[in-house]
Length: 165
Image 1 (tube, rainbow, N blue to C red):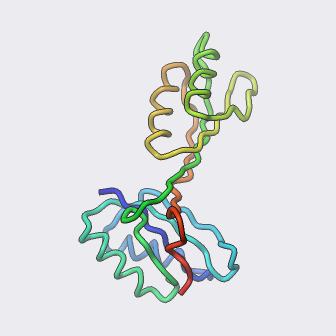
Image 2: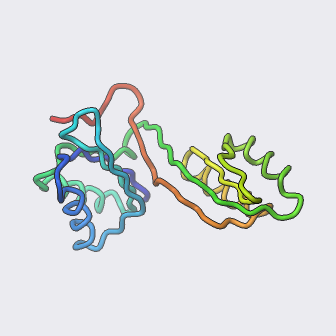
């Protein structure tokens, strides 16, 4: 099962490497990874996506908590949350593909950021499944030259559940 794990960790050199090393040495795969500072300059939020049974994710969480840099951790998949991902697509349209692209952009709530010499850059923000569906749809009217995806980011609905302790 797919899990989004949100981790608050000390904003120090090597903290990310220690988290990644934990996954690597135990043979766990990280599907996506985002790290950015929070409003507290001493703490960063790391959001990662991995797959595994509940028992495997529980084991990962227990091992992560033992890392000295980890302040707090929560599996966002356990609760009601909002998930988003940013994707940028560099496209070269097939003949007469402009109208189709305009329709898809509108349907998916995407934006055309640039149209330079027949190459379109399109931005889409949505759930991972929305981005996957857009990629399949847009391939019908354009050649996909480049895809850049941020990976999943998630936040709990309502009151914060992940705060520095």
